[in-house]
Amino acid sequence: MYINFWYPIVRSEDLGYDTPEKARVLGVDFVAFRDQDGNAHVLSDTCTHRGGSLGGAWSGGNAPRIINGCVVCPYHGWEFGGDGECKNVPSIGYGTKVPPRAKVDSYPVQEKYGIVFAFLGDEPEETRPPLLEVEEYGQEGWRANEVITLDVPYHYERSIENGLDPAHNEFVHPTHGFSAVNRETYRVNELEIEDHRQGWGFWFTHRFDAPPLPQKGHQTAKDGDTPWGDAQPERRQVTAASGTYGPHFMATYIHLTDQKMFRQYFFEQIIDEHNTRIFFLNMRNFLLDKKNDGPIHARNKVVAKQDIDILSTLYPERTPLSPTKEVLMPADGGIVAYRSWLEKFDDMGWRIDINEFRRRNNKDTAFAIPCPGRRTSGNWVLEEIPRIKNRAARKKIERAA
Image (cartoon, rainbow, N blue to C red; front, top):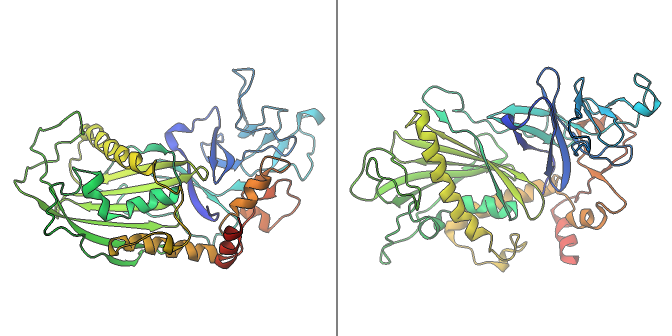
């Protein structure tokens, strides 16, 4: 798990004006809320008074938790603004000057694509990775399905690597790949791998055989097939492209024909080592009528469940540290490229020391992801989450664990 990247926190439509939303990312808790102007803010969730959860429940039921643009701690009523500074401590009187250490980490926020993103890290703006640009979002001729979230019980690296794997289609998704595999001629075509056009990752293209599009009007409740237009009597060759951006964003482009395209974006919220929430944005340049959103969502959920069933039973839970612990094939070229990028992020010192975090977290220590403000001011109460210096240190630590 890495700091210093943009992470999805909550869907925009789920973040109202009256109550905050709590989210766990990278093993620690955050609170998101809107101020009087509707601007979204994301703070560390732990109150620096006595450990109250800023996004926690009120026993009073109807008591407001956002007052004058501040999120209110339900334990003692301390009010924190979007900048993370405490504005009021009721026990010493409203409007009284508060201690300078009465502050929590506040993170840069962008609200795009129907998602509230926060930059979880202390990297300065001029050197931090930018948020992935979805170039066709809002453009004429493209329609975005409403963002859906998928909660999956496995490590995010397994999730990302599954999306980079062209060899599983025929076996996991019968209606994706060409299910009638010819044992005499079948093989996965060569991958063309290159750096991502926006940096911070890579991209590959792949051509594969696919079954014919279903007849117009054909739909089965069992597998969720949808009427994708004109039927074709024989198998088609489909072009797909996939790649990563940072450790936890992935995109897949599917060109059913030269004119009919899906562009799918998976923004992964790394909850902890064992759980991931996927924010899924599906774009298309055909079937633009809103009435098609539901059937397309239904189809995507069927495909997602097929993956979830497989990935929930992988062993070990995480990808092995050493390539000698697996037998990789040329079709795994995207996975090799992804792991190479993770090593680059290791050498930037952005990987969380999960062993040290596990050892101390929630015992006598409350951790926070450091925000950019820690580079310009001191006097912080919550301890920064531990990190590993580089790839060599990581391998040494994990060998000894």
